[in-house]
Amino acid sequence: MTLQPGLRQGPVPLAVRMRPRSLDEVAGQQHLLRPGSPIRRLASDDGASSAVSVILWGPPGTGKTTLAQAIAASSGRRFVQLSAVTAGVKDVRQVMDEARSAADLYGTSTVLFLDEIHRFSKAQQDGLLPGVENGWVTLVAATTENPSFSVIAPLLSRSLLLTLDELSDDDLGLLIDRAVGDPRGFDGRVALDDEARAALIRLASGDARRALTALEAAATLAVDAGDGEGPRVTEALVASAVDRALLRYDRAGDEHYDVISAFIKSVRGSDVDAALHYLARMVEAGEDPRFIARRIIVLASEDIGMADPQALGMAVAAADAVQFLGMPEGRIPLAQAVTYLSLAPKSNASYLALDAAIADVRGGGIGRVPPHLRDAHYAGAKRLGHGAGYRYAHDGEHGVVTQQYPPDELVGTDYYRPTGIGFERETATRVQRLRRVVRGLPPETHADSPASHADSDPAAAPEPEADAGPESAVEQPGPT
Image (cartoon, rainbow, N blue to C red; front, side, top):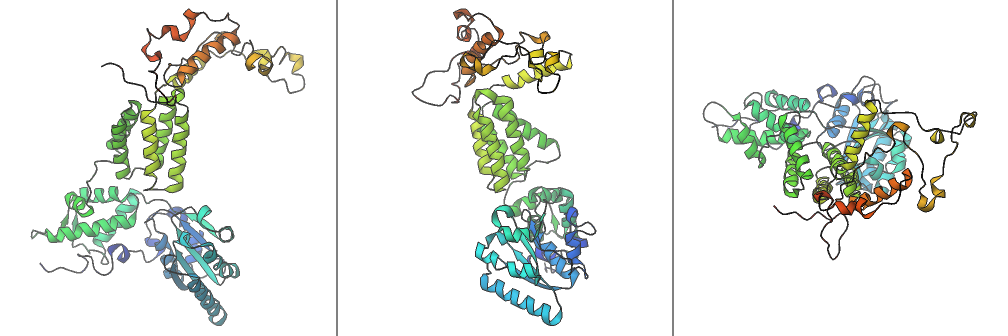
């Protein structure tokens, strides 16, 4: 079979050939392309006087370079591109000198696109300041890292920070369809199955470059497997091209909810291996890591709670780390948090306590705030008896005093019922003692002690003693 141009990867990759030639061809990032936006002003012929330098921050494959080149093509201004990977201070100074000469001699403004600016050292970034400050160049810088940490403050203050979002499934579908039919791509000479199209979108995870690269690789395989009916890209060819299994996972469909449900139940059930399996499926399928982190935080409070109070801190730290690192490195703190939560002792006592209190409130069990607890810091409050008789807790022995805190209707109501698992083993005893002091009850007898009920309540049984280990150590399994 004689191959036609565009069916095999040539000197110019498909992702480069299909780069939009104008802002109107850009897929996604519509929040940056509204009429009158800084990007639109930069791309206009008469926008040189009002153009401001911008820093484009976003994940790979979201269109940072595309926007810069579309600006250059649309504005007709002198366009210079540097990469921080290969350029040095000398290159930056040369661009500044040429831009200054072009402005003085020909009245031509220069747009400098600097890719990967976060790779520039502080000294290299300092070299950009004179040109930006004096208007010799309009800087368009691109970075995948948070500019607050990777770009010097003087340059940040002179530039407008624009954040790019991951491309949506619709945006990726538009790019894939365009590549199949456009003369710059396959010009309709390759057929694309609906399942293969969906697989490419799913595997791209919001990255246009990844989608088009996978499409080109699958099209190459389709040409090799041609059976006389013309090349056809199938789901199986996409899986072969990217050398990874196609996960049956739809971020907006049943599989999304089934996998996250199984993940939550595996952590709750203390099966660390199953939990990591479902985490891997979500990561590989391109699930939003922020969604995973949010579910981990909920798990830490709902299913572990006071049995291991450190679990919530671990979950929040993992979420912060994901936000700071991005993916794929963000999978590492996610895995650590999932492992910790899976092995931690479990208790939903705090969660159930709040639900019980909410049920009472919704059922009318509210009552008036006792007068001695009401606000007494305004004129006339004391005349109404607010604050009268209030006992300051720190004046009592051990910082606790006998005093009514709930409304009359709820005196003696117990919402929080600690399980005696993990750290709540200590909490159970403390709660009993505090309630007796606060409510003015006589000291507890041995029969009232939570420990005396351990034999009848397996959940409250003490853990086997160990030579050493934190209170949050995983519970020993009971007999099966």
